[in-house]
Image (cartoon, rainbow, N blue to C red; front, side, top):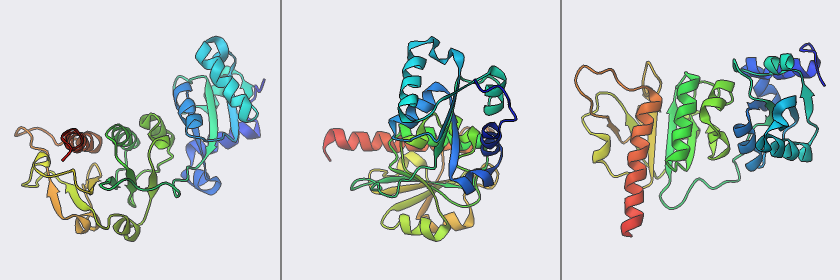
Length: 266
């Protein structure tokens, strides 16, 4: 059992949790908790380091996960004190793994009518993670992260994403690359003051939705790529929705329209 939080392996994980540059230099990130580690393994990720608490095997689910982890590499048992040092949460969840950055380059961007989400300058980790989770649930084909936002592999983003990192292609691109990826799509930017309601447009065609950051909204660079802007009509005097909530509302409207198109065969 590993009992010292000063162990070099523990310090290396702590560095990945605390520093974006450490993640980018090593091209690795931290995943913790049974559910997220299961999602990582299901997606084919191979942990380069695994740490677990003694009580992980106390449940059948935890025992099964530990068996899977041991089948792909070394799994190190750690004390509760060390597990807390390896965790980004107040209550550690029994298992922590380090996995390589995900490579979606070989995956096609979608079918004949792809739906792409462009995230423009969202800096709140919880907002980005929740938005990614909604994108996965709504059937988005690809997510593009424009410059200026929070790190995709920030531990709070990973945790809030609830496995979205392992379910859909997510890539960080500069604006020229974003523009190239959106070629042939009808791009719409969500803004608070747009005259056109989000549910009055056709989302069944090849489409891209741009969602901006919490304070500034969609940037000038993002607006240049949008064919039109759309808004979520709201009761007067109510504060605008945050990025995750606004994106969720619009993406599920797009999903509803696309589901209806499939059901009717149009």
